Image (cartoon, rainbow, N blue to C red; front, side, top):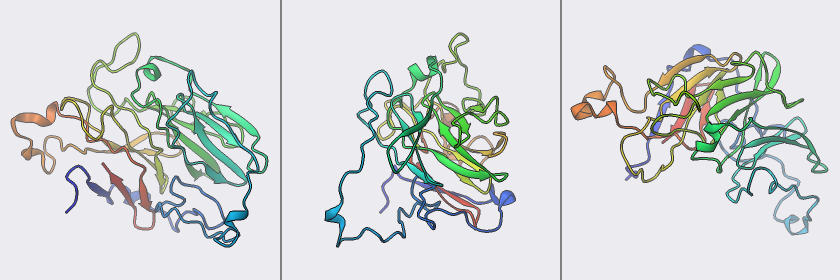
Length: 288
């Protein structure tokens, strides 16, 4: 029997209009372009130079330290680096700084981080950053980051600079499009409730699928919060394409099961874990 707090949603029709021919590469060339290796999160590499016969002969070639990224060391370091075209890309520290690393020497090639603001200070997920998303968009490589303050940023992997044609100067505010939730005028922080993200998005057929997380995922302390709706954005422009309501709204299937209009104030139900996909079928798999 499945655990009651684990559910799986398949979003097929929402991605169908953007289906392209052929599956994206993941680990075929020895690369690691997704958090889970490939879009299906198989976490498997076909490389065979290292096996059980020589694993014991491995030695440390270099160490890369992340303890000086942020005001205090990040003791919950959970990032999985991407390996794309001869470079490693990862996040580090409580501010989720993006870092490009030379894999042969461990040299830091560039760094980028979101300027500190009250939304970062109020974030319930300063730690836990699991990594980045990657896509090839209009014959150009793009990295996507979700910051602790719940912004989405598109970066040029060569320079580490935001791509100005994406969103507003490379940034999309993920508070927008959630619903009518007021923010404090002087800080931009949500007036009540919380929502952020600890996992990277995933790009499927030129659609960036974005999840979220809350302060208390497994055992929420209260039912009133912002729902963890899942959204899709245009990978080139950052334009919002669709929103899947994990908590059905008025007129949607299942809404009538939320008696006494409980759907109006109930929240949480975050899609907090890394996502998987099948671009040939136009499906994204979203655990909550």
